[in-house]
Length: 225
Image 1 (cartoon, rainbow, N blue to C red):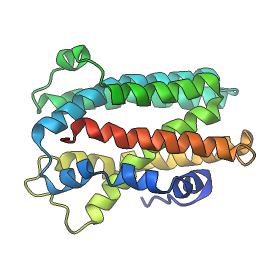
Image 2: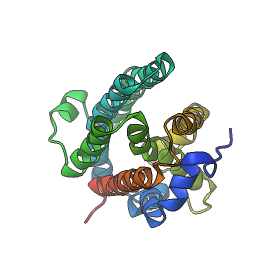
Image 3: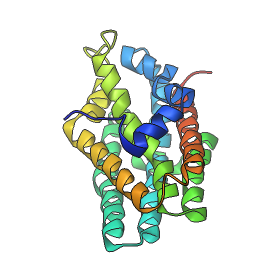
């Protein structure tokens, strides 16, 4: 399915984030990953912190369920949280085994300060604000990965044959993930209409841009200094 990333509230936030969005979606980490030249140890560091991130990401949607004001909103947040815990997390753990990483090793790893800054930011936005503030802070992650995989597959410079990261690229370009992203964009649009996004736009943009810059910083975990 084709993703329309330019429409509605998300599209406006994405455009107005400006350079921050490009820093996130075209980070040197990603360009090296697409070429297959990213150092393996850097990718392992990223995988460990991504495991720890997913735990906090699930907490974000648990908070989203708490912040929901209708049964529909509660169910939607709960469904995503369950998908993270019961589908995405087991897949991540299984994938990491091929990289010599056990769940026990990843769970015992210290949290990188960049991962801490990002996850605590979106949790704080959910605690201090409402569900719209939280969902805007979470949006760069879920949608950005689909855009990243999309440009990688479209870029003639991307190498898939023999690339150790090819399965990572293909997973985020797959139809199941793209469908989840389309649903997230639609859900954010409807939530924004119910919660007065137009009047609150400057604050929402600030949240979105900060979350986007924190996403860009997260890639630095796996990128050589």
